[in-house]
Image (cartoon, rainbow, N blue to C red; front, side):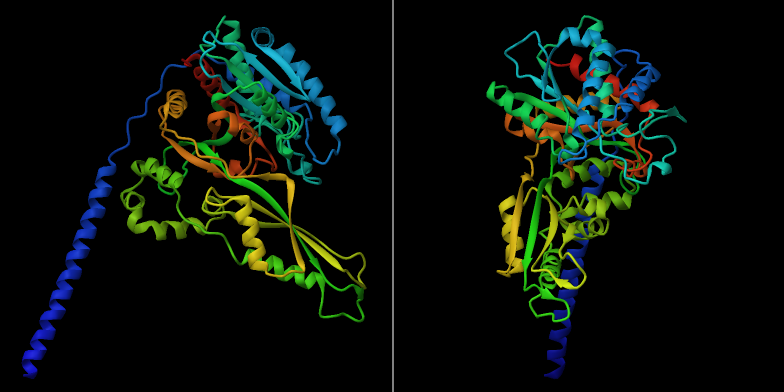
Length: 499
């Protein structure tokens, strides 16, 4: 009897082991087949440039543009100086790009500019090409750390140096140079092209493109697509990928700033109570930080990985082409890097805190400011509700700063007619490089046009490495001269190929 039971148990274990082995074999087979189906990357090919562009000529224009100190400080600080610089910059544009100014109609809205270049076919939806004229300040005390004065516009060592070289006068000038060359040739676009150059993108864009978008909406203008700053052409964009990839942002995260106001009992510090505003505020901030929002790989990232996979070594290709199995592992890897983690979820960033007027006085109130960048899965109201729930303290008020909030944008499609057109222009200009979608974590002026556009795309048509990202809003901002000519060609191709 005992032997029979033992045999039956042994047979059961064998069957289980065989079943497990079969499952493992099947999973391995699926993984290998899916990896093999990724295939080899397509050959890189580029179309002839639409016109020969002397990059140095355009570099000189960019250097001149940098010398205009169009600095946005926010809250009205130094606006008189900025406005005077914007006026001078506008005059310089008229003198530098006369053919474009003759071909297009210019409107001055506040200190921002709207150009309309009428197309041959008024029945087709127009497109909008964007850039902004303002720049961020140089952090006080860091000017000495710049290799070249941030507002001198030096051309040296193969770069144009200065604040705004990348963000965003590089796009502005290459776009204007492209339009000028086409206008000089007698070109008329097939459909109307509009150009919006904002005055205050770096502080929210409400007075510039925010106003332009309202005016155009009132005129019942609706764009086929909009192109603004956003992504870039990244060198070695992912471990194992040696090929440059153009990351075009198809969406951007939302923006919300909340103030937490904690109330307590004021009085003399020599007789502290158990009702301390600062202690209550500290507890509230920690509760928010320690209760992160839902995270995970979204559809945009999945498509991004599908674009990258063919250019990867076998192991990385296997990981990314089998997210049904490896998704949690990949998500964990992305979460460990602040740059990639920010793409995965709504971020929480305490940025300011205040309370008290003297070292021996207990403040009755204390305030903290927390900035959130909203993932597409969250909304302004759901974030506010989440924060109130986790704090769960009636003596902590949660207030939204209404002037600085935007929902996460809709996601544009790279596979509809508009997306295919812009992708083709990128590939034709930049040696047939792959184009991957991206959700940009920063806010751009293009968000003002979301209600009046079918699609909104965001791309800086310049190559960038990891070291370049810290230069944006940082020290030693610069743009490679070698990138300037191709960027002009890219914008020209966009305008020439419109149907």
